[in-house]
Length: 56
Image: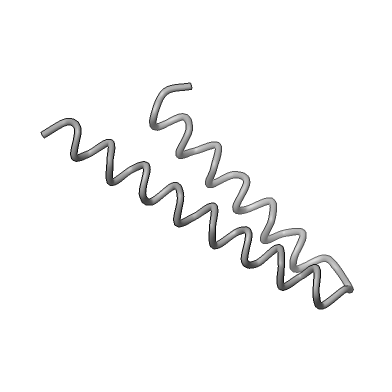
């Protein structure tokens, strides 16, 4: 998978985790899903930043 496709896929996973967090009745699971979504977003940001560094 190319760099930008990977970033897009990870951001989609973050969105999915966020939707699960909103739609679950279990507060513990909702918190875990929000944390997972944030971790995915952070990972995508790092991949994007590293990709930009390689281009320079």
